[in-house]
View (cartoon, rainbow, N blue to C red):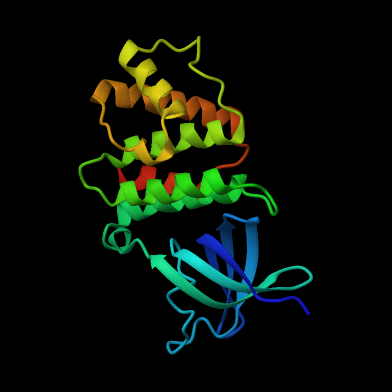
Length: 217
């Protein structure tokens, strides 16, 4: 019998199963993206009720099974409660979760992707930073982590400030990514670049991104 293991993770997805259970998708530091079942987690008295919500970050205690894991307990360090008060920024956060779900694989070394996700969700709680800027930073740096970042595109005209911002995004430590702002023109150019990269490297539509577009019309 295998022992219970502890995984540092963020909840990427949470889905009802049966009458009271939940299936959660976790991006873990130690084992990449994994699926776990939380028995009774939808009961109002369950100790797993809040810890199986989207965005929950902390230590998850899991029993490894043959094809999945069973979540037995969790020690949550951050629920990102501010996102629950701002539904527009919450959808940006959901886009980050959706993109990590796309990139994540079981037994991958996803430490850097988890760090990026955590810092990006923290940045979304800062009203001083435009959510769009956080999105483009997240997308570009995720490509760097995945080894797919092509650098500054030659076929798109970009002002020097945009090129400087892109180089900063690609190379600065993750913990210092969200310490700058840009002009509206640079923001529009980053949008163009991120969109072109998304079409090239992502082979499916992101539902949360479509919702963001509707909300901001």
